Length: 261
Image (cartoon, rainbow, N blue to C red; front, side):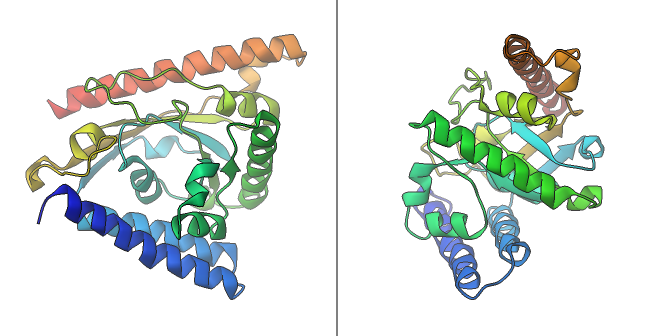
């Protein structure tokens, strides 16, 4: 039973089950809050069905108010792990091609996920700005556990490196942070490559199904501007916050590696 085909079939079943429910609720005028529960239910059931042991550190570093979560990315497990382990509502900036997948794409649309057209820079910026405004409005006056987050994987895709070496970071999340004032929260993960790396669906024996996550302290963009909001200084601040975020994630991965020894 534990082979790639069965695991892929399970994922497809869960997409149809929860994505289909979200589509139905969208057609019947259910609220976004109700429809978004399908994202959590999908993630919870996936982790439970695959019997993955989750270890999470640093949840206390989350803040009240909107934030951009910037996680490392090595596995298909990363998305459900973030949804399941981090309280609050999560919106993932997904590339437009994902929205073209039957049921999955319609399910993403029905749960409010922003569509990012990487081939059209202006449209991509517009979509991210709209997502930033959405999480800001949703988080206003809410308790910390009910806040809204925009999740952007700065690597853009999953790394295949078995030592969890990060891919080059794209600037989208950091431009958005500097321009909107929304803080970045780096998130490190370890164990995903041993579970479901890119292009593979096999799982190790149950005792080896361990996933580790570390949520870091928020990084506030205003600290990188020093009161100077000129375009030149913003560009420098984007580079600085990118480098700082990358260093935090790298340190977190190393820390998680040591906890696993």
